[in-house]
Amino acid sequence: MTALLKYKQPVEISFHYWIKAIPEPGGYYHNTPLFLKFAKTVLSFHAKKWKDTNYLEERILTEKPEFDQKELQEILILFEHLINFHETKPLPRTWYIEKGRSDIPPGHYLEVSIKNG
Image (cartoon, rainbow, N blue to C red; front, top):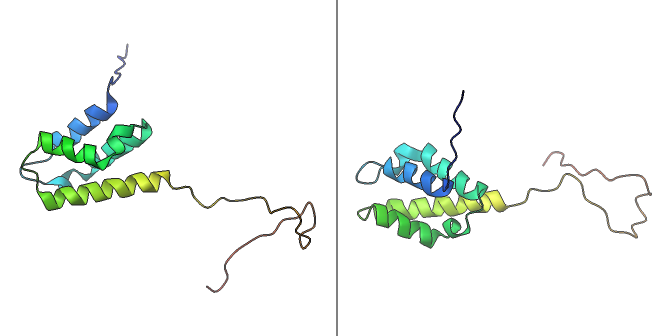
């Protein structure tokens, strides 16, 4: 029989896994996979308060008051980039052309590509 493990606060737990694994002082780059897992957990669970970099900075400094300020700013910038990347919509594969275009007959499509730059 297999046991089932359910995290009651997955974002909080993910944060603690990451922050507790950072050696003193700093050392964030040794734990990039845990940081990325934390960021992915924040995004997967739509944790609004955690998306706020001010909140994240406060939590990091609560856990590690001596955290290197330069490294902290780098983490916050990276975290913000990850959130923006995740929330950015890609270019759609297809879209409807506005009504009234007479150069494309009904039932046909216009294919857009780039050739030679």
